[in-house]
Amino acid sequence: MSVTELLTESVVVFSKNYLPLSRINLRRAILLLVTQKAEPLDFYSQEGWEIRSCSVVLWIPIHIRLTVASTERVWKTPSVTRREVLRRDHHRCQYCGSHKKLTLDHVIPRSKGGKHSWDNVVIACERCNGFKGDRTPQQAGMELRTQPKPPANPTLLFANQFWGDYISD
Image 1 (cartoon, helix red, strand yellow):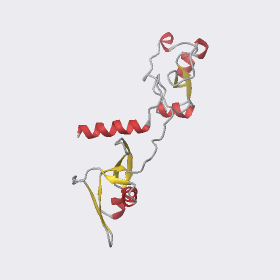
Image 2 (cartoon, helix red, strand yellow; image 1 turned 180 degrees about the vertical axis):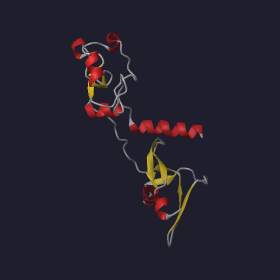
Image 3 (tube, rainbow, N blue to C red; image 1 turned 90 degrees about the horizontal axis):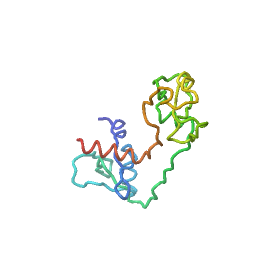
Image 4 (cartoon, helix red, strand yellow; image 1 turned 30 degrees about the horizontal axis):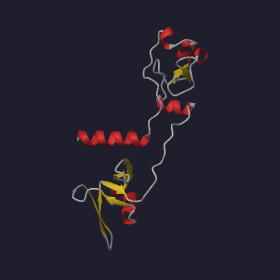
């Protein structure tokens, strides 16, 4: 494996309280370990990489834990904007699946007391939005592909994915 390929390998970083935060490249992991801002999580694991320089040999494990007292970043649910709703709904109409001429649609129309909230706003194509009009999906005989909900905290999503992958291996 070349040095360039080796430095793009990834290491999982855990917070001080052992919550998996993210994956970082090997170069960043080396920097955290050398500056003692992180420590190896498993001293007995054979998984990792041996990095050699002229004067130092480093063992970089596949899991490291931050040692610095970092404040956990508070994640706030983003505002309901077109960009965020498009991201959540994967740029697809939530009624027919189209990805052309997309608009915001209130599942329960605002005229009927619906709020402009994550639980009530979806992406719809112009055709479906026009057909639905000022009715609920049930009144229009339409069905949502997914139930609208606020976006999840990225750290918790990564932690769920990490532990799910780790347990299934």
